[in-house]
Each structure stands twice: as structure tokens, then as C-alpha cells.
Amino acid sequence: MTQRRQFLQTSVALASGLLATSAFSQAAWPSKPINYLVAFPAGGTTDILARLVSQKLGAALGTTLVIENKGGAGGSVGSEIAARAPADGYHLLGGTISSHAINISLYPKLAYDPIKSFTPVYLYGTNPVVLVVAANSPYKTLRDLMTAAKANPGKLSGASAGNGTSQHLAQELLAFKGDVKFTHVPYKGSAPAIQDVMSGQVDFMFDTTVVAGAHIQSGKLRALAVTSGKRLTDSFTDVPTVAESGWPGTQGFEVVSWQALFAPAGTPKPIVDKLHAEILKIIQTPEMQDRIKGLGMQPSALTPEQVLNFQKAEIEKWAQVIKAANIKLD
Image 1 (cartoon, rainbow, N blue to C red):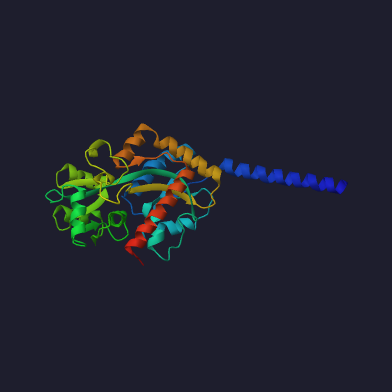
Image 2 (image 1 turned 135 degrees about the vertical axis):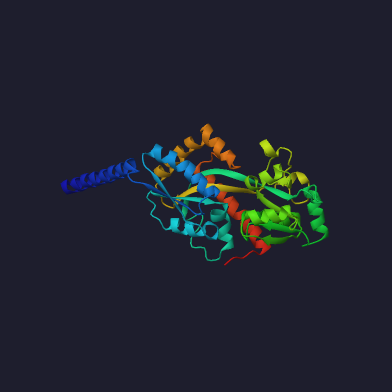
């Protein structure tokens, strides 16, 4: 009996020690710099957001965040590196709709799973997309464009920043839901693509409000529709949604680009919750609200669990579009 009592006392002491050690480890975090990997080249929206948030987040946590850019394959290169990183709270990843919703259906040999390999930390915001044509285009409305496409399958051309990009897939989703056929014209980036739309060499293009906005305001492009569920505020209040066109099959049509922060799967929940809470405070400041809206984004306040559900829905939606359009990348 005495031996059993001693065994129980020893077990309780060990368990208490382990709990104390775990609590101490979490309380001590962070005790060194945090690596913030951006899965896209410097200068893009993902990189800009990382630099906007990291300085304030580092100050709130009492450490520094070291930003590292690893672009390539729509964010796949950097995401693969981040997926293999230790789940210790010292490794974060800036990802997007491409790296964490689209690529899983585009690349047959993707070396990470956007759901199983990561834990969502924060959805910075969503970026609506606008469908544009040249200012002198004969298409005045989205219905005009769809009517012409229906009567002439494959004749109308749509530009994009490249195969598998959100601009490309928005085009394919419209064709799929609207039961029409377009000819996709991929470019190496948005800049040359939108130039050819303005010159009339390509009929139309989907792009973010950030990229297309200045050309719409200058009168070089005409906006036919926004892909958000509701009309946008500020500069695009007069532009109808795709669904408002009344074209059969487009009810509920919605496409948004998005930016999010992830941690490797298995990162302790108290750390994820702490990161989320501190970033939420930062994003909700008037200064950051203005900066994010200046990037053409709608700020988000979703919880990590809500971000995960949102991400799963995005993966399912784009898998359907990619399969229907038979899009394949190596």
C-alpha cells in the first residue's frame, strides 16, 4: 500500500512538473525572433502586408519578425518550405488564395496540403475583382459580353496574369456558370495583360480593383461588373455585381482574392490565439484600416476557425472550376 501511495505521489509530481514546464514554455514565448516567410516576391500585396504588420506585431510581442521572400509557382515554393518548418511559434507564412486554395487542384504533385499542413492564424482581408473592357469596347454591360460569347463560342478573348491565376480562374468560373466559352490569353503578369485589353487586342480581363482602378478612373478602361457579393463602396458604387447582370447561372457568383497568415500545423493553440489577438488589435486601428483599404482590400475579423471554414469552401469551389475547365499545370 505504501509503495502504491509513493507511486501515485511520484506520478502526480511528474505530471505537475510537465504541466509547469509546458506553461512556462508558452509563457516564455517568444524568446527569439520570429521568421515570417512570404510565399511571393518582394513588392507584391503579400509582401506589403507582411511589412505593414510585422513591425507592430514584433513590438506587441517584445521581439522582431524577420521577413523572408520565397516566391515561385503561385506561392507553392515558399509554402512547401513553411510546411516543413517546426511548429514552435517561430515560423509564420504569408499565403493567398493561390497558395492555399487554388494550387492543390492545379499541381498534381504539390508537396504540401493547404489544410493539413497549416493552421490559419489570420485572414487579413479580401480583394474584390472587377471585369473590365477597353473604353471603346462595343460591350457596355456584362450581359452584352455574355450575349456575344454565347452567339460566338470561343471568339471572345480574356486576358490574365498567367495560367492558374485568380484572374484566369475567375474567367473560367464565369464561363462555367454562364454556359459560354472564352479563349484564354495568358500573360506574364497583370501589367502587359491589361495594356492589351486597353489597346483592344484582347476583349476583356478580370483583375483586382487595385490594378484596374487607376485605368478605370483615367477613362482607359470600362468596368462591367465586380465579382463581390454586393456592390463596392467608394469608387465603384456605380458598377453592378456579376449577379446583377441577370445572366442565367450567375446568381450567387462571387470571386475575391485574399491574403492570410498561416503557421505550420501543430503550432500550439495558445500561440496561435495570441498571434490572432495581437494582429486583430493592429488591423482594427484606424491607421491599418486605411492602409489595407488603400490596397483595395476589405479588412477581415474572422476567427482562425472561421478562416479554416472559409478556406475549405474556397478549395472546393476552385476544384470544381479547374476540373470543369480541364486546367493542368506541371
